[in-house]
Amino acid sequence: MVGVVIADLAPLSLFALACAAGAALILLRYLVKRPPLSGATKVWLLIGLGVLPISSALAGNIQGFETTKEQKVCNSCHVMNEHIADSIDPKSMSLASRHSRNKLFGVENCFMCHQDYGMYGTVTTKMGGMKHVWMYYTKYINIPISESKKTIHIYEPYPNASCMQCHSTKLEDWERVVEHHGLLEQVRANKVACASGGCHGFGHPFTKTPEELANASVTWRDGKSHPPVLRGPLPPAPSSLPSAGAPR
Amino acid sequence: MKVKFHLNARNYDRALRAASVVGLAALGLMVWSLLDERALPIVVAMSVGQVLGTLSLLVYLAVVIADLRRARIMDTVVPSMPPPPPESAPASTDSKDSA
Image 1 (tube, each protein chain N blue to C red):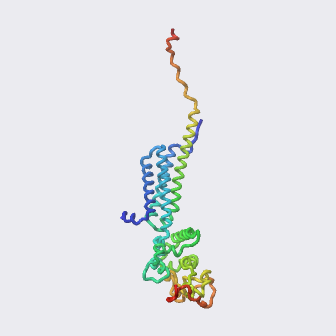
Image 2 (image 1 turned 45 degrees about the vertical axis):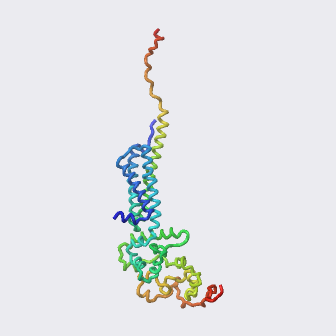
Image 3 (image 1 turned 60 degrees about the horizontal axis):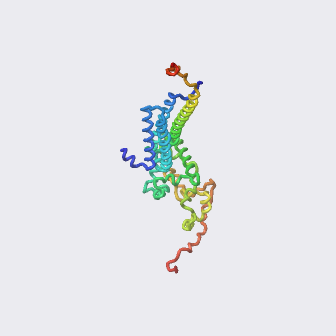
């Protein structure tokens, strides 16, 4: 059992555990033997209280930061169980599940879509995650999942900037989709949601009510009513592609 | 001359034992977070665990610094103390004097 657990650990975790074990041995020996405070005792305690614990903390912190990106951490709160189950379901056609199948997303699929971007994106994401943990243990730990679907929402509407980290909106193929072409500026300005019922579908549709799913339409961020999306003229087909008989 | 120390040798031992226990608790939290990869253990290890570990190291450093200061003061105090009175000189047995 222990061997299986240790075999699953990352090298950094093993290093942190080894440092912690070494420090613990030194401290336990000091507590049991109670040697006088000689120079040798000071050096041993420096290793047991300073060098090894700091090494363990550094490695453990790095590993901890990496671990918090993984879906198993999100899944440790019961209100996220259905989100994870849907995202890893190969039969699901939700937006989250379709993206999770991408090998680049892997076990970090939650973090990949919900992280903040920019220089301090990881830090702000972690701070948001701390808030999630606090809210979970102080408010939501005992609510049933059916209730959590109605009461728990992300703090702000899902930003298009997160989608645009991969989908740049600048490729010709992307612009040749009529809806993209008609809403190009609005999409880039985050005025209309990519992850909405009328466009690419909700990220986690099982959290929506049947009414929300039935009335799905293009979601505008400003809350005003808008006329139907105007589909502008398509750009000309790319001329750079060589035709079959064209001279090379 | 009376020299006062905030930490005497007995207190050093007590403080270091307390630091060791606190350090062990911090290590326990770190190990918990590495073996149980849920949000709570990781958050606790990276907050409470870090505080406890830092506290134990600070106590150790305080004890070592106090001990070094005590040793330095003792080094300066002891040489300045008057030397012990010389023992009474033994009676001379020089044969020349007696001659």
